[in-house]
Image 1: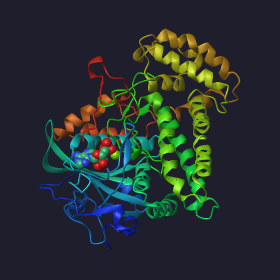
Image 2: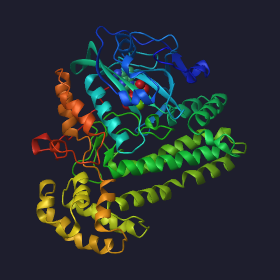
Image 3: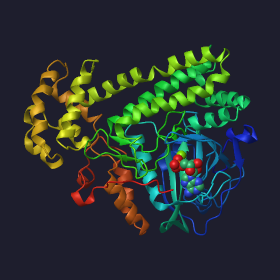
Image 4: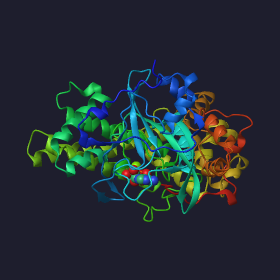
Length: 490
Ligand code: AMP
Ligand code: MG
């Protein structure tokens, strides 16, 4: 049997949806890591995936017989500015594989050479962004948040120039689909309504088959995506994740986390936190993420106007109603998740103030987001003392002073303390991919040492469980280790 049993459903859409081309060759491909569990779920034979043939495929040096490589066309709003043509400038879709659940998944090479969409880029990636995406995408998945995943990382033996030279790498990304808000915008801007219709049908068939028979499937699709994005962003917020480039071309309509550029998890909590070196106005700051997601959905809804069987005014009215469900939906998810993080099993709207107050105190205390919640999940409330908060807060007394407010609210819960702690540990991770550890893993990786990278990937598979011996990866950064800025790396 063929090693990669690809289907090519996107490549059977009309030619204007993509550009056909093979990946560019690299000189010396070597496997850094392969995700065997994911491979098995995709129906791949794990024993064959480290073979020379497989590595050549994952490096883009060989195209399997049944693969029809394509670079996908899309447009997008970047930092609010309209760009009519973006597209896969350094990526190629090799084809789709059916996973154990019977759903199609895209297999895409990232860093596989220039395409007609590359503009001034070289179509390549260096090892830094490759290792970062591997660690972070897999970590997000295992935190229980929808995400594209990583099947493999290879080094290419080539040099990539980014202000200085770095070793090149290629990542294989697995996605439920690569359709973005920007894919719809691409055709809408060209007034290609026939393509928009085909794309809608494809998206429903592929990602929302349950909507096929629904009476008004366009509106139903929009509502699904509004809810999916609301839940996704609430989940990001609950682990302190800052995406960093929430452009419409980086907003997946299968509602997965996609495109790991300057993304980062917060250490110390700060509502307006920004890491990305290019986000000068804080457009994609932590607290702005739900507002931006809502805006991105409005851009998506706009592209549906010509498809609705009614005049424009009526269409806008209906679509606006659907979009404007986002804030309330988001708030519901947010209260539910953050309530659980504080041990409330059925948090109500009134708990919004209570949760917000805790976040405010955490910010004033300059406390670590992850560890603040984790300590509340591991130590019985009455045993909490200053020493528990001191390792990760500058003003630990502020948190301690809040504890009686918390225990008063917990008094209205039914769970035993033991149960509460157990349930809280399931939503408050001990491990997140901390920036300073990622940076170290990259520096070491560039040096050919992948031990830290491998350890991080392994630990982050069970982020809610304390793993003895790996305390280093739970800890906040020392002052000289703090990562202040992150970069796209493209
Ligand atoms: P991103 O900010 O990573 O989402 O990328 C935005 C756009 O820039 C997409 O169209 C990418 O394909 C393109 N791009 C990013 N890096 C490169 C590169 N090294 N070469 C060519 N195109 C790139
Ligand atoms: Mg992108």
